[in-house]
Length: 307
Image (cartoon, rainbow, N blue to C red):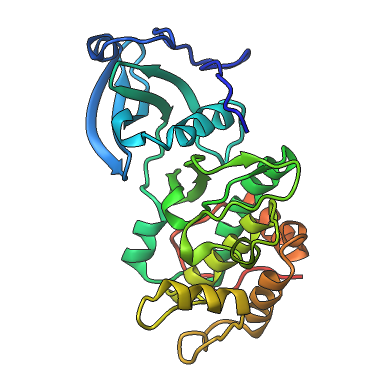
């Protein structure tokens, strides 16, 4: 897919960038944004909290050192092209982008609660209610992009940001579209994060949007028990890939003892039939439940509604 340039905002949006998209200087950017603390980092970028000087709006500034992207420039172009075309409450918004001689600056929605990986590391595992609500949030985002023939290809906890609302209520937002692409025919490129990669990617039989649904099934397994469904004892990647291709699921005691039999059966079926899972009655019921009261840290209710 050839990358396309985008506009930083669309008609009807309240956000307007004071800078043009053409090359600017760091001084120009600092005149418009008060750049603050680091809130995230990765191999190619660092994310800082920033404040827009003219109205005080808190934003996230993703700073990409372009020298580190040599040979991977398409990842940034994908993120600009695809995120710039998306507008959904469960997806992190891109408002503007600016470029100096050495860096690119992506002005994005600020999501206050860190990422789901940090939450899993801190808490270990979650109740069935919490896990179901997470699936609902991510399913909404995936339904939206899949209807646009976009496959994310890197769904994992690190790319799910936690939005803190009032009264300890939290929601998830999907971010990082560096590996995303529009699919009009089967794709054969092997990519993604090993733990979450789908069998059809490894088998090189051609894949499409269902690989995101597989990754969501893996995520559901992890948040319920605290570890992934497919693991190599020696952290051998080839062994891991063989386990994924075989897709033999195990629900080990005592980790799965508190989980209802219906949910273990659901996860097993989820990973076998990814095509239609986002419209499964259980997901629809959880989505309806979320609209009445979104994900909350409280674990007083232990079991999600199921149909």
